[in-house]
Length: 129
Image (cartoon, rainbow, N blue to C red; front, side, top):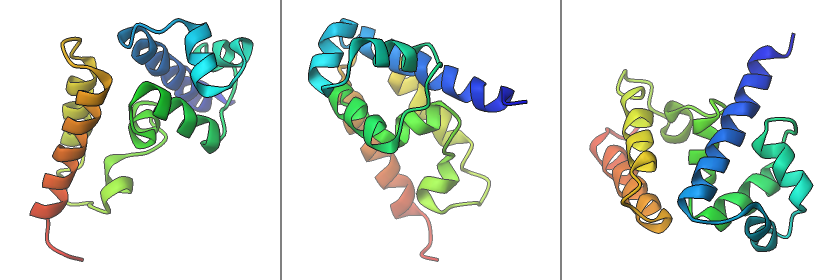
């Protein structure tokens, strides 16, 4: 019955694992940066545990990725939820952000900066509600 939720937790865990590896961090190093235990982080990466928002925030900070990006990658947050836009352009943003996130030539900090600039350009181009 919880299949969609399980898929979202697996997607979140997979994204966290990929970002950790892109940052050349071991699970132990990520645990040290976040002050979370190795086993707990392993469970999150395998989609076995639902992290709290506080945990998502500390993981995102340690990986130099926004918490919104982590939630979007898991399907727990959609672009329209972040910007308040529902004008049909929202589906394009996650694809652009995924492309940025998947580019191994960029550092975590560069990825966060590009996504931040991209989002600010979208919000500045849209009319005020």
